[in-house]
Amino acid sequence: MAEKKSSSHFFDLKIPLGSLLSFYGLLLLLYGLFGPRHIYEKSLGLNVNLIWGVVILLTGGLFLGFAYFRRVNSN
Amino acid sequence: MDPIISLNLIDYLILAAYVVITIVVGYALKKYMKTSEDFFLSGRSLPSWITSLAFLSANLGALEVIGMVANSAKYGILTVHFYWIGAIPAMVFLGIFMMPFYYNTRVRSVPEYLKLRYNEATRGLNAFSFAIMTLLMSGISMYAMALIFRMMLGWSLTSSILLSAGVVLIYVFFGGLSSSIYNEVIQFFLIWLGLLPVVYVGLKAVGGFSGLAAKLPDTFLHAWKNMGSAAANPMGVNWMGVVLGLGFVLSFGYWTTDFLVVQRTLASENINAARRTPIMAAFPKMLVPLIVVVPGLIAVAVLPEYSVALHGSATPDYNSTLILLLARYLPNGVLGLAITGLLASFMSGMAGNVTAFNTVWTYDIYGTYIKKNMPDEHYLMMGKLATIFGVLFSIGTAYIVQSFPNLMDYMQLIFSFFNAPLFATFLLGMFWKKATPWGGFFGLLSGIVAAAVHYLLYKLNVIHYSSEMAANFFQAWWAWLTDFVVTIVVSFFTRKKAESELKGLVYSLTPRTKGSEMFWRRPEIWGSIALIVMVILNIIFW
Image (cartoon, rainbow over all chains, first blue to last red; front, side, top):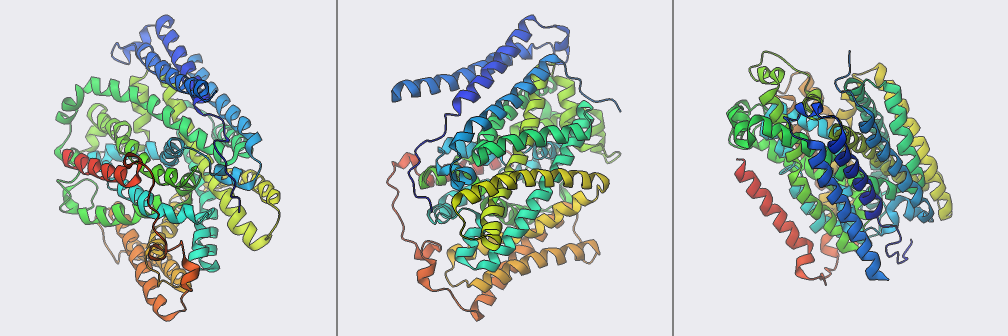
């Protein structure tokens, strides 16, 4: 049976996850800013894409930030 | 029939980005897959934040989400029982009491524990039933999901099935369990980020929580108040059915012995991380009702077809509850995100099944009955082949079910026969050293038979319950009790294992290791906090 010490031998998931979320956030934010307005009748006049885009962008940024600081610290 | 939702370019971009990132992650993991333990158990190297989120998401499949929204449109707040009493105690129990046996014995699967504690026959019974059922269920859920995507977006069944199966095959083939787990973590965020907007806009439309409460009948607003008798609540189950059937047998059976979830804890980097995995998962688990129960309640408040159903004058299609709400409140953009969340949770549910299958197949069936003692590379290759075979078999099942839709109910039912009694076998195995190998085997077998017999008696109208759900809960309870009693009785008449063989496998024969960690990292502390929060939530929504 393998008794090897395998310390964090996988890559940091925060990077792809943070990138995906940041991409989504940016996309929704831009669509909210420049996209059509009439679609927000559905959401009671609320520009959900803009608001939620910002939230997701911050979440994604947080992951990337953590991953960055971890890398800087371990070097 | 026209699709309910129409997507545009931005939604498709969001969907495509998800598919691309999963494949990239799977491919990037390829270079780490050197041994079979890397492939099947992530080299036991993942930190607990990742394994906890995966532990939770493995269960939060798309069908689960859609089904629970449907349940809450049918039963109201009673649906929280599936999340609080029906999950939290079992998750805490797994982390505090059972994890040391799973992790410290270095078993690689749930059936392997049964082999060490009982005998080869018990393992075989569990391994074969688990492997077959897992694949069948994966095919069935693929078919069910394809139906939903057809209704929602107008995609053909074949294109949904091939798209999802193809992507899952690619990333599991390259990255094994790690791919599966990483995708579950991504899915966790997507499903929350995807569904929160509909919760927010929906709540705004009904005038917040108080506005929502004003539009619903009293029975929809209390978790326990109307549980005194089965007739007084929409679920048709009394408190005993919920506590014994759901809270005890079904919940413990699923969360502590189903390899699909247990496998995630085995991927942890050390015993403490393994013990923290289910316990840390308990906290987000308690919040899941926010994204599944609240939408169901909103649907009843705003969609006429669901509110008239309250008076019994119609039976709406409950499975489309969530989709109708998404179509009503979400503009393109966040809409695509919600659909991506659903697709992600569907794919990761399937990947979970496939990874659990390939592990049990390779270690417990192939490596035990077909080719023993081969070099590790051989088993690694077999795991990859099993992945391909597993996906193809699931696709086949999806098409068979397509021509025989009734099969779906039967399979789910048969699965419950195998799942419910297993917890008795584990409980006695881990905490009663006198349980014998054949006691374990016959206990498990008779538990399965008891579930089948109970089902027949119920269908033949010999036993009556006020609802299907009550029948289901009590069936689990009787199957469990049969297993429990038969294991004990047979154990008195059959040969015991020597105590030296049971070291590390049974509570009383395992030296207690004192946790060296600071008190704020100990699983006992967090487990107690989780239970307290659960009790408080139940009181608030009493």
